[in-house]
Every structure is written in structure tokens, then in C-alpha cells.
Length: 166
Image (tube, rainbow, N blue to C red; front, side, top):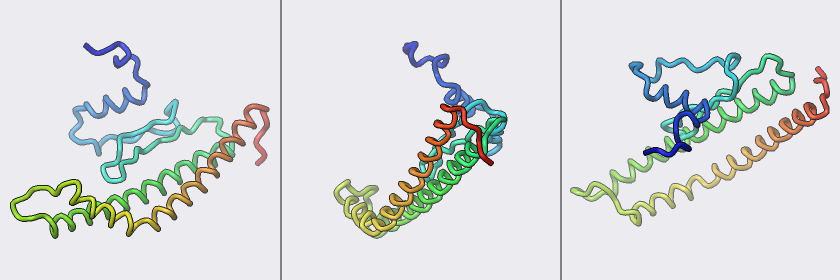
């Protein structure tokens, strides 16, 4: 028996929407149209991307959105796209190089390498890509500090009910 804490009635709306889409009888998931950001009542989180492993977020566009709020929403979308692009490229390289490593190092008749044997590949891959990770992390921090600054400005304006200067 499932605990009442985990019953469908207690799930956030976004989980229910995602679950119902997963169970859908539609022929394939590509036929599902993404929600209209102007008509949704809150941000919506989608399923993980098969390559980047990131979940796409559709940010709500409120009808009375200020210029600052619009800038914040658009920058969040831009950062999400940048992040998705990086991890898609990184993970694609990883999968490709792992396959090549397995083809070169997998003895005939064996299906898998042990964790110790694969650790040689993992370390080599990380060593080869450490500069890209450092650059990514620096840029990620810059982008998130900018987002944090915008979010704070919006909260302060709402707190003191300041008008947006256009």
C-alpha cells in the first residue's frame, strides 16, 4: 500500500502533468506541444534530456511582467540554453570516447570492463577536459551571480513597491 504522503493527490501539479504525459497514449512524445508560457500559472519542469541529463524549464510569462522581470526571465532562459548546450556537447564527447575506449580495450568474449579498468578511461577523460570544466564553472558562477542580482532587485522593488523605470 502506498503511503498517503505519496498519493497522486499530494503531488505538485507539475509532477502530475509530467506523469500524465509519460502515461499518455499518444504515439510518441515528440507530438506533445510545450505549454504556452503566457497561459501557465507557474514555471514547468520537463523530463530530463537523454544526452545533457538536464530538465528543461518553461518559465511562466505573467501578464503584468515588468521590464526587469522580463529581463530576468529571458536571462534565465538564456543561461538554461547555454548550460544545456555545454552538457550536451560534453556528454556526447564522453559517450563517443567511452565507446572508442571499450572497442580498443575490451577483450574478445568479454562484455564489460571492471570498474578499475574503466577508471583509467574516466581519469584520462577528466584530465583531458579539466580546462573546459574550469572555464564552464567560472562562466556559470558569473551568470548565476548576475541572475541573483536581478532576482534581488526584483524582490526589493516588490518589497518597497517601487515602479519599474523604463
